[in-house]
Amino acid sequence: GLGIALSLAKAGANLILNGFGDASTVIAEVKQFGGKVGHHPADVSDPAQIADMLAYAEREFGGVDILVNNAGIQHVAAVEDFPVERWDSIIAINLSSVFHATRLSLPAMRAKGWGRIVNIASVHGQVGSVGKAAYVAAKHG
Image (cartoon, rainbow, N blue to C red; front, side, top):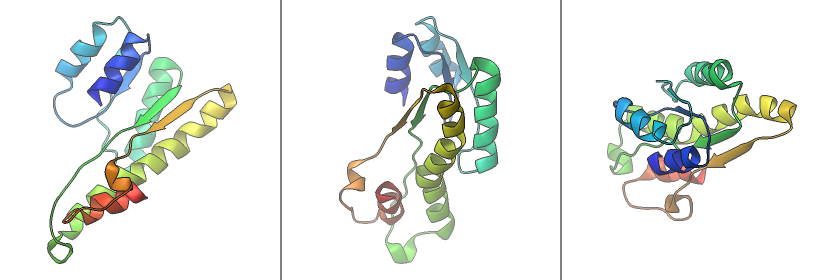
């Protein structure tokens, strides 16, 4: 995610960042390229928080021109030992968030007549791996 953010910032894009952990270091790193940078702490497993993040982008920048769906988490366990709550979290973050962010961004992009959606995948969208049932299912999604 950071590499993508830095590349977009170098190209002159304004950015709304989202992710786990302390955002201040990432914001400072991205700001060095001169663009406007914001952060929204949305939990992307929650469609309402995704909607709030996109409303924030509308208020701060007039909307989303380029949406990068890059959120992803992982948990490794045999299917019979896989915690249901971890399965649900992985599917919500790695798969459903892509649907919700895209669904909510498309109308404004269409109204403007321009927009780009970049979905970051994984080799696990092509092949499976032992112990990664939820991740592989989400990436095949």
